[in-house]
Length: 153
Image (cartoon, rainbow, N blue to C red; front, side):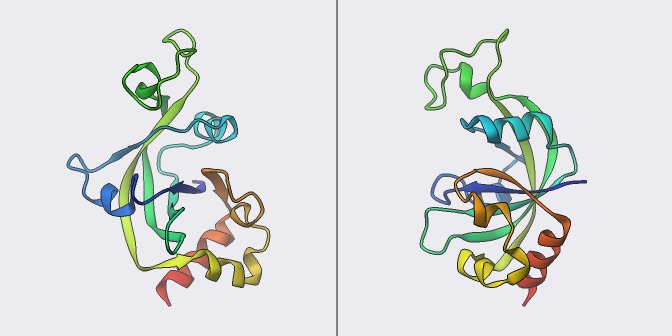
């Protein structure tokens, strides 16, 4: 099992949105960064655990936990001309973008803020704090355990 951090703007798709999905899972789609796409396509697997990170909001930070319930498959939005994620260079024979399905696991009592994460010395090398703009990023087991512990305080 691997650990990940997925970033989303809460007014676009939040931990609460995922928690309230009628079918019990939500599609993590719309990724249009090649580095993030490669992680989704090549590294993320079923049963991997995901920190759900709220970005571009009043208090950015880790809002909760999700689990990958369906590994990478072609993002259907890339083929839909009415979607804001449409990519005219994509086709069924030339799939460029992938998505995964996530199931809600837990919402933290309060967001573990970016400010808090930056204050924890053992997280100094975390991808989030080094390459903050990447929307899908790996998290080490030690980082995972540290953040879960911080959420429970």
